Image 1 (cartoon, rainbow over the protein chains, first blue to last red):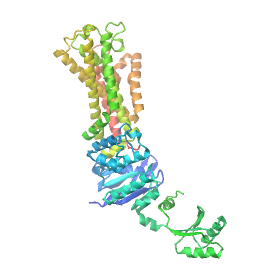
Image 2: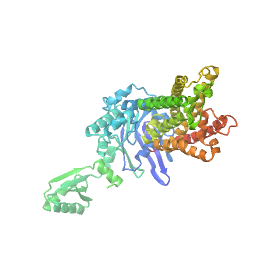
Image 3: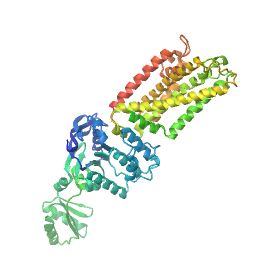
Image 4: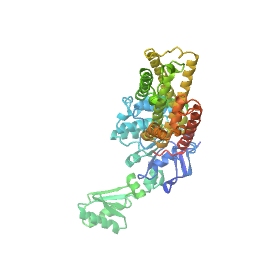
Length: 301
Length: 268
């Protein structure tokens, strides 16, 4: 049996002359949470749609839970998904919408109330979907994705519209599902959220995979930065000059100098600043976070 | 396929849709049948397009289903709207992606939806038959129409024939609605185009050139519902001709829509 939840090779999708996804190749091990990131229009949703059999790839191959993506009927009964936001019938209640999907997939409707409780909609299940707030719709979408008791969960922006408490609940839910063996493939623009929960990462830029692998590997590969602050703007310019004179790439951002360099260079930097008559009010060596890495790798900023 | 049909029935049975549609069916069935008897002596006619249906015709074995037959075309328009809306709304709500994730067999999805909507249409037709015949029975004595022949063997045969013809016609109209829904992917566009074409454009074309009634889809299906014109009649379409031409329209439309539904990317 395959030990990958998702495996794609050279997966491509073209619409006429426009390439939405180009030769995407990545693997996601079973039982992990994989973050799927990329700027708007980078091909994340198109890739997810191809994996779910909603659109036909123009090239490449793929496997989900060991089955070819040419035969979605073989793996979709074990896959839960919410793509491009929740979509339900406005005139039906949340519970009726889930009952509809349960009937469609041949699942028991017994789990519906449990799922509504699980996503915090237990007391609003009988309300019509059109009366739900964006956050409630999102929760219902997650409940629908959990209907088949999935081995693989694919979620596109699941925290959209959720309040901080809701985001925390979704994070905890995904982590507990992963702990129970469910593989989770999740896209989000909240990179700080993905950084907290993801074991793996697939990063897209203009339809091409720019990184795939363990989150820890990505972060360790990043150039550490040293953040330094002086007393005023003039001192920041002097600090910038010191860093550049030492051969480091540096920039002034958010009222501080950001210097790319190893953490142990902070000592030399401090000494050089002191010799230049500057007393540093902040000197922090740190690794870039996922957001900074993302911008660096996708060239978005 | 059956899972899809059962799921669709959950949607179709919601009170606003089910009771609203059945209410309209009951109202118009009662209205069409009542007018047949209440306006029996009216010089402006008592049936569709000012046609006069006299006491002697209503007293025949087929008299009991005259009202039911005349409402058949209207039932077809209702079916067209329901089928079109139920098919196209999956695109406008974006629910098609949920459906196809839970049931990736697209032919099965289409077949299941069609079965559920046919069942819905069947309930409509049964209700319409019941209301029409009941209204006819209640109003016949007042209009001095004899009902003696309505329930003999010929009368029962007439009821059965009318019932089958209306089922064929309504399913035909519904299929055209479903085809429009799948092609246009918008309930408003599909219903507007369907109703506009069937109620206005076809009638205008036939008014300009009467022979076109033999070739337009709505005229064929309406003719099937009413049992067709007698052989060699200059007015109306013969039943067998209507069945053939109407069947070709429905079949070609269904094949094209099915092909597109199965092959088309779901990107909304």
